[in-house]
Length: 311
Image (cartoon, helix red, strand yellow):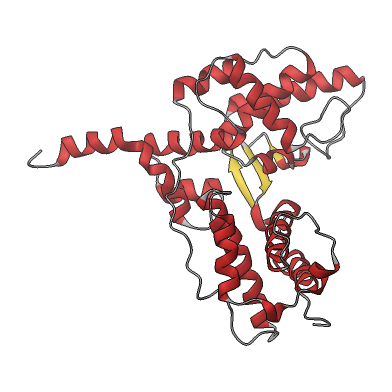
């Protein structure tokens, strides 16, 4: 490494994540923000008041030890949730593991720092009745109405991430076999089945769109378009979900990710195999999928009452 200044090392680390790991722009931005906040703390400017100072640029990796990292966690305490603190510490750990692998440092100062304990929050999800109420509340009138219906039907039918939905192209939809191809985390592709209601909504949306613009739509490019016929962003999709959740009077805050939670929950409640749901969601670890089993207590209690010899 050409220099051992902390900021230069952070920049090289971010570049390696992009080139070697294929991380998304969103993930890279999160790593950069966390590590630059850490660097500012080491430089004595934790609130970023003088973030462009020469002092920050001059901070060297050799100045960082376990005490500095513990001090950073102490600074974060009370300002951030425990889950956020744990994420920031994970970014610092990954950074120093990278430097150790390159032999820029002999020991990893973050290894001796324990991760704050935190309880995992329960996923927000809708009941089946509330989910149907949300989907049926969307009036399919005009291009935007059919687009919104198709988007929300696809979110729930396939359990896809909002980034995967936004990235869908026309050619990714196999209507004949009821499948869509999505690009998930780490640029991993997977095939996801979707139901007829979602497929019909997508087809109708595209037909209405073709009629509106007065020409045949291309067989490639973004599936869901904004009012200017560009690719719809994840933020815009989230606003659409929130709009209809409020309009139909749902009592819990609903996001595109909550619809994904609902998809997993409803499958497990109906008796779907946990590993099959893991594959559908694109989870690399089964423990991530197991978070959804807590909502299946009714089914578990029914099995207990039926099978336990001394209930």
